Structure formats: structure tokens, C-alpha cells
Amino acid sequence: MKTVLKVLVAALVPLQFAMAHIEFESRIPNGDRVPNPCRDGAVWSDDKNPFGFDFKAAGQQWTADLCRKDSDGDGLTNGQELGDPDCVWTVGAAPARMTGLSHPGICPLDSATCKNSWTKCPKAFSCPAMEEPGVTVRNFTVKPTAVPTYEKMHLCQAFELNNTASPVHMIGSRPIMVNKNVIRHMVMYGCSQKPDQALFDSPQQCYMGSYPNCIELINLWGEGNEGECFSRFSGFRVGGEGFQYGMLSLKPAKTNGFINEAGLSIYFTSNLRPHDQGTLTYGELELILPPRRTVVNYNHTCPSVCTRSFHSETRYITAASIYMQSYATKGRLSLWRNGALVQDLVPLHAYEYNVPRVLLFDPPVEYRRGDEIKTECYYSTKGNNHSVLFGYGSNDETCLSFMHYYPNNIHLSPLAKLEFCNSIHGYNPCWNDTGITPHIENGCNITGLITGDGLKPVYMAMWRHQCFVSMGCSAACQEYMSNTLFPSNACFDPKRSLKALEYLYIRYHSPLSHQAKGYMNSMYPILKSCQNQIETLALLDQARLASKPAVNPPAVKSIPPADCNTGKPHEEVLTSKNLLVIIVVCSCLVFALLAAVLLLVVRIRKLRLRDSPTKLRNEQDEAGKEKVYNAYG
Ligand SMILES: *[C@@H]1O[C@H](CO)[C@@H](O)[C@H](O)[C@H]1NC(C)=O
Ligand SMILES: *[C@@H]1O[C@H](CO)[C@@H](O)[C@H](O)[C@H]1NC(C)=O
Ligand SMILES: *[C@@H]1O[C@H](CO)[C@@H](O)[C@H](O)[C@H]1NC(C)=O
Ligand SMILES: *[C@@H]1O[C@H](CO)[C@@H](O)[C@H](O)[C@H]1NC(C)=O
Ligand SMILES: *[C@@H]1O[C@H](CO)[C@@H](O)[C@H](O)[C@H]1NC(C)=O
Ligand SMILES: *[C@@H]1O[C@H](CO)[C@@H](O)[C@H](O)[C@H]1NC(C)=O
Image (tube, rainbow, N blue to C red; front, side, top):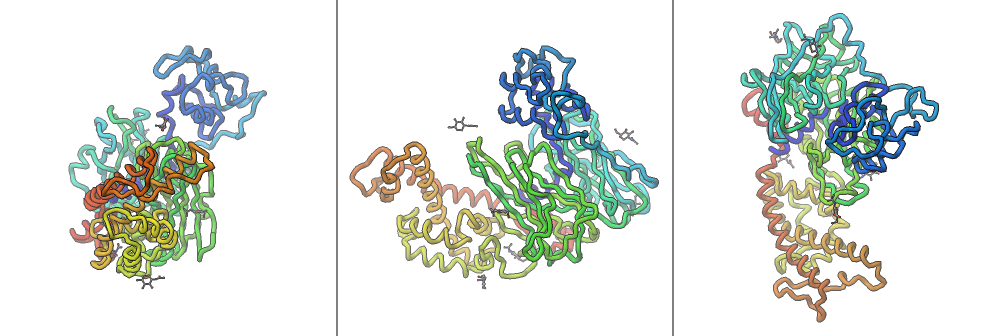
């Protein structure tokens, strides 16, 4: 279930996503009043600017140093430009001056002392197609409503999309927003069946993308975005055999308040474009970014076996973007054919959550059957003390890419044409749905895990290395795992595919054979316990090395493993440091067991995965509906 939400929630992120710095506006004096030479409104220009960098370096706070600095070099300090000449302003207070403001990061366009790195203002949103004959606009706005108090809730309202007997193409949209800063993002989903009447009457609280019959993304909007303008080659079909109903899903920016009028002006043309358009969502849905790392990297590839099997034709990509959040540092999206790079769709670039890139392709990029698309995500968790997980909160992360493509076969469900190609701990369910074996990802033979053939030799080796002689991780077992198993077997290496194996084992409806489950039942607690022990020892080693760049051999390593039954190590001298290791190791074993049990319980409740693909393709019946729903969850 959770995964259903994730995949579909993933879909909410607009292609032209531009998260405005609304949350930061309040942290600088006159944050919401500073004129932007290019566009009235936000203090933050569409381009990165020197003040933006300085603000970030100052920890996104208005400090005296930042105030006294002249970020853009125009001769005025940031404080003078922002109406706090004496650098005394604090958050919430009234600035000394509220007029005569100028932008602290952008030189006046006619400045003699400094030059902006750009010479022209960024182009404003323009979509000539919206003015063409045959184009009509209709507004879809939610009825006035209170914002849900629970942060993760969205608001959903259903609409009838078509008002003509003959089909039209949706070609773009613009946001409608009466109160600024109330909505964070909006998505219109196309529905394959009519939603419940209650959803037409008034907005309902919902989780993003939680309606199984409404999953095709047809409109995307995010803060700072002025609209969407689809390529001249394609549009989303509405009416006729296309969508008749849509579900508008809004994510409020705050947990209290009121939405007066918000929604989308959607543009339709009766002069149908040559092709029907679709949206692709690719990425990894289970990120775990460890704390205090300067670089954490995740790559996702939509495998060739999947595109060969699910695509019946060459596709053409008209737009692409990567979506990550605030820990992201770099990103790249690339197209590969027979193992060789064809081209970058989004070249490797310094990624700024606030300054997203949506690249439009005219002519469109050819995406053939069997091609692979690779999303690379890089993060830094340097300033973070806790792990960052996949999610949409401000402390979560994502690694997703969105693409528009044509031709979209509107008779197939989004799942049957692989519009969502997402992995879970590096395991791509689409591969299994092709029925092609062996399934080998990231060096791990997943087919072997499922049959148990790949588990048996490891199980035997664990016996030989005394892994089953006692509870927890024996010395010999730990030695075997850290020196042999982890380095040589990708399926068991925590840095490679161990998470995928765990996922297959503990998920609801585990696909593991009876034999494979038997092996895992014995191996799993020991594996986790040893993994924890190895990681704890490594951490202690690290900490010790950092605190004392010692000449002595590492004390921690020389301690024989503690005997948890007696609580004593096999060594005469029991130093406090040794004691610490014993405590850590022993408690770690108990913790590992508890964690394993808990994880099992939680996961069984939360996770489901795709059912048979052939059943999936048959969505006509009630059972079919359930299958589509389960397909992501
Ligand atoms: C649709 O909304 C836009 C923006 O709020 C407004 O200018 C326009 O008049 C509306 N059109 C209709 C038909 O209500
Ligand atoms: C919308 O399209 C459907 C299918 O073509 C059609 O039956 C229906 O009458 C249309 N709705 C309106 C309001 O024209
Ligand atoms: C991700 O891809 C990049 C570029 O191909 C490569 O350098 C990097 O090692 C990959 N990272 C992982 C974790 O596989
Ligand atoms: C992280 O931990 C360190 C050391 O315990 C502490 O000094 C720092 O304030 C913490 N940082 C955050 C963001 O919690
Ligand atoms: C993967 O495992 C399957 C099932 O055990 C086996 O038949 C196949 O030969 C293995 N493939 C490789 C390349 O190891
Ligand atoms: C693969 O698909 C089959 C049948 O469609 C299903 O029974 C099995 O659980 C799936 N295996 C995995 C690993 O998802």
C-alpha cells in the first residue's frame, strides 16, 4: 500500500517544477517585497545569483555578515538593498525601511560597477499555441475549502474534462491562484473510470495519487511555475476514447489556512495534434542516505529487457526533467542503446531544488525498444545527523525523472505500457513481468534467490563458518561475511543487493520459493546481526582513528569478540573502551533481532507488489481494478 502511494505520489511532481523560496522569504528583511528586475514578485530570481549563494552559505539565515556583504558588487550592502542598513533586523520584525528596495543579488541592469552573469532576463512563459484558432480554455478550480491539518494530506476534486462530443487535445495549462503561497503543487490525473460523485461535489482529503482509476499524469504544476506548454507534436486526448474525467490533486503549502480559489486553466484544441501524449515516471523508491556524507549516489536504470518487452514501438521524448529535493547536489538523465551512450537528456549539472531544469526537445528524442534511460542522483548529507529516506517532506529525498512522450497508446493502462519504471532497493519489478530469466540486476542473480539455488551455497558456507552455533554473530561467521561473502556475492553485500534480497524476503506475498524461504528464515537473523556488528565495529574504528591518530595498532580490532552469555571478553584486561565495545556488540545483537522482527511485521503490512502482468492488462473487471491498484503497492 505504501508503495502504491509512493509511486503515484511520485507522479505529482511537475515537470516545470520550480519550488519558490517562499519558506525563505520570511527569513530575510522585506523578503516578499524585493523587486526583481526581470519579474516582479519574488526576491529570488529565476537564475542563481550571488546573494542566493551567500544566503545558503550563511545557513539560510540573515546574519550580520550576510547583511554587511555586497553580494552583487553594486556598491550597496545587502542590508542597504533590503531595507536593513544597520543590520539589526530579526525574523518577524518590521524592517527599518520598506521602500526604495533593490535586489541584493542582481545588479541594476544599467549598472556601471557590476555586470550580471546573464545579459537578458530569462524568458517569461510563452505558449503561442494557446492563442491559435480552435483553442478553448476552461477553468478547473476546487471549491473554497479549509486546508487539512495533517501535513501529508492533499485535497482531491474530480471534474468532467470534456464538454464536447468529439475529442480534443489538452495542450497546456496555467495555474489559477487567488491567494499566493497556499498551494505547493497541483496535479491533474486522467481517470479511466468515473470517480465517486462525492468527489465532484467538493474537495476531499486524500493522499496524492490514491485513486486507482486516476493515475495518468496529464497536468503538472509547482510553485513558481507559470504554466505548461506541450510540444507541437502531441497532447493528452480528452473525450472520445480519451479521458472523460480528471482528478485534481492539490498539496497545500501549510497545514492550516483556507483555499479560496485554486486550480488550473486548461487549454484544449479541437485541431488534434498528430499524436497522443503520455508521461513517464522513472526512479528509485527506497532511498536511504546515511548521515554526514559529502557524496551519496543513487542510479536508476529502466532495464533494456523491460523497454524491449513493454514498448511496442519507438517512443519520442519531448520533455525531460529530474526531480530531487534539498539534499541533492547533482543530477543526470541519459539515454543508452546496446550499452553505449546515445545522448544526455539532462546533462550532469549542479542540481538546485529551487532552480529545476525542464528540457524540451524539438525535434523529439528517439527512444527505441530496448533502449535504457538512466537517472543519476547525487546528494550531500554533510550537515545531517540522521539518515534521509525517500519521501516528499522537506527532510526527505527523491530520485525521480519525468518525461513526456508520444505516441501514447491510450487503450493501455499506464502500467501495461511501462509509464512507471521504478525500482525498489534496486529491484525492478518490470523485469519479472517480462518473464525473462535469469533476472540479474546489480550483479545479483535474482532468479537464483527466488528458486533458492543461489541461497543454498551461502547457507552451507554459513554452516561451515559456525554461523549457526549460537545466537548472534560468531567470530568465525563475522570473519566469513566481512572477508568473503560481502565482497564476493553481490546479492549479500549490504552495499550492493542485500536490500533487494531483504525486500523480496519480507515483502507481502514474497515471491521466494518454499525452499528459499526456509534458507532465509535461518540465515536472515544471523546476516542482520553480523551486518550490524561489522558496521558498528567499523564506526568505532573510524571514531577512534578520528579522535586519536594513533601509532598503536587499533585496540578495538584486537579485542576478541565478546561472549554475550557471560558478558566477558576473552581477554585479561577489561578497559572501559573494551567494555563499550562489548556493550555495543551485545546490545546490537538484541537490537538486530528485535529490528528484524519489527521490520518483518511492518513490511508485511506495508508492502505489496505487482501481480501477474497479464491480469494487470485486463482492467475491465473489478478484479482488474484491484490488480492495477496493487500493481504499485
Ligand atoms: C479562468 O481563470 C483565469 C485566471 O484566474 C481568469 O482570468 C479567467 O477569466 C477565467 N475564465 C473563466 C471562463 O472563468
Ligand atoms: C465526453 O465524451 C464522451 C465520450 O465521447 C461523450 O459520451 C460525452 O457525451 C462527452 N461529454 C460531453 C459533456 O460532451
Ligand atoms: C552511477 O553512474 C555513474 C556514471 O555512469 C557512475 O560513475 C557511478 O559509479 C554510478 N554509481 C553507482 C552507485 O553505481
Ligand atoms: C549533529 O551532531 C553534532 C554532534 O553531536 C552536533 O554538534 C550538531 O549540532 C548536530 N547537528 C544537527 C543538525 O542536529
Ligand atoms: C541464475 O540463477 C538461475 C537459477 O538458479 C540459474 O539457472 C542461472 O544459470 C543463473 N544465471 C547466472 C548467469 O548465474
Ligand atoms: C513475478 O511474477 C510472478 C507471476 O506473474 C509472480 O507470481 C511472482 O511473485 C513475481 N516475482 C517477483 C519477484 O516479483
